[in-house]
Length: 469
Image 1 (cartoon, rainbow, N blue to C red):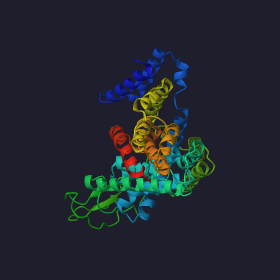
Image 2: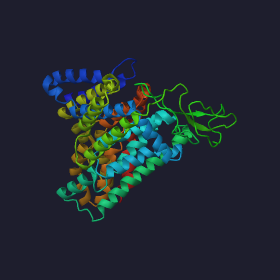
Image 3: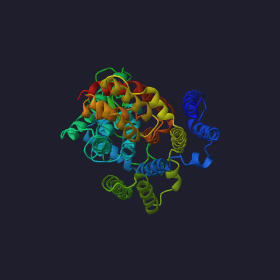
Image 4: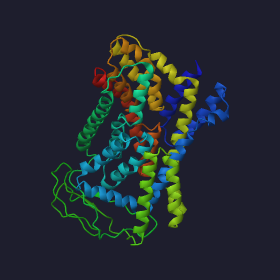
């Protein structure tokens, strides 16, 4: 048995061990990387070099900035604003992260940076309005994926450059076709999520009302209790929703309005002093600067977030513990340990072995299906853009055999990214970090299940939908 094969078996064992109560996957992955490195003759320093320092900076910096925004009420204010823009319609509220993610990546934002911006918004809505956290995460990441193949986005640029270098002749309309394909795939997934979410109760029925301008806001350093959707009576959720009156801290839903959803503040929520509006304005300015600098000037969003959080903390004398304690260190350990182990697996050739086992044989369309599965399986625990670039050189022989060049590139790109929503990568780590601590264990299991299912389903769907384009 080769060390590459052993590393695959150990990874499967680590994932199975998550069923054991009290087992920490991050610690287990770090220990497994150390022991496997010893067995394979890889030094401790080389194993440590696989730790994703860029991920550490990214998630710590972004969560520190949003911790400040939550602490001074800015995040709550933003969520209320989006609620008003959506007219209180919960379906539109759930779609907001999808639209924001699509616009960000279509404009050229890197997927990790877009995820870092969208995740707190998506999971913030989920916590306040009783939307399923998993549904909110899927919608947000699907929006990000939808814009990844635009002419300005990283996948769109990479697809065109690699095609040119590999001699894959793309028509002049290819950039528009790539963008249309990504948007179509995202909209189909989004529509399916909304249907399933309404059917399963992941999106409450009715409308929500944001607190009025006169509603008091918090005075204490602790964040306000989240606004939630509460039924007006004990009637079943399937009853037709009725219109709601605006909520206030002391208001209670009227009886007899079955299925009505009303956003109400906690009655004992303390109030925010007027002077905190200045802190909110500066926080919004800092958040806008982080977005502009990361999107327009390709600066590291993690370092930008750390710098902005430090400036705000010093300027307004916020307690440091209130910020540091909100950074999800358990998620940093989890994803850091997993990516360290995955880096060792790549070093040992585990993913190359998986690709070699699958092979590329048969008719062009069937060979493309195999390539889509290679891309999907390896992208599950590795960088999807790196996998896409690695698999692309296998495409020219299929194009020469009659495969559509646009369809082949589009199918491979989407097969690589549609499996990104899993807890073994940076995307999953950012989502877990933005979620409420109480929902993280269940959300981790849901993300893992979703990711494993997507490995089986996504490649064949992208192949069937786009292989003939």
